[in-house]
Length: 207
Figure 1: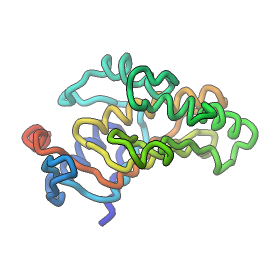
Figure 2: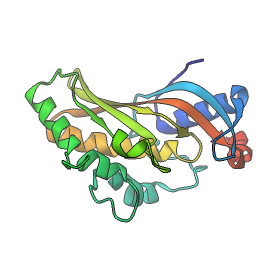
Figure 3: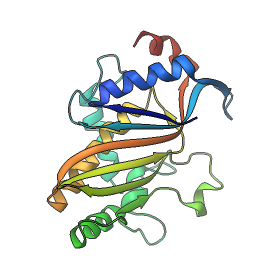
Figure 4: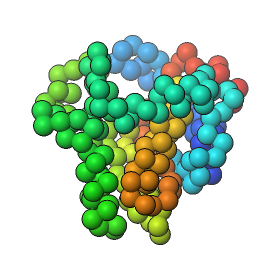
């Protein structure tokens, strides 16, 4: 059953979505044998993604997110990993397509384009891989002089990963906004499976 959370800041959104999952989430053991609570098709819309960005209860500080995580979406180097988001976004496939540059060009060519889209899922690799991307589909759209980003997430660890995801997405939004002379707008995530792992339940209950 779909769930919608509209919040002003990332911290407010995180607190509210965690509460919803802990209160009404279904129980499921995932394919790796880990017990989870989860909701399906959870849309979280953040009106002011640059305010109150990281909760003091989150395991990682804003400094860590800024220095170690946020830059990954823009770095095309796969390093020694099976994949990175930066590689999929900046050097996709055998042709090493820079999808972020495509998005920037599309928006500069047509402010009202609905085709400023990037994807990380690669069927030629991901149908036969153990480690596959969670953030799959990125859509950038201009609204009244601001640029919004909406992201489809196939599987989302809402306690451990979602705040870091949103922080990185906000930084990506800033980068594209700067290159298109648009203001940075909102961030929306659509998590098809929004879950909390059992090892985080105690901390999630305390939020």
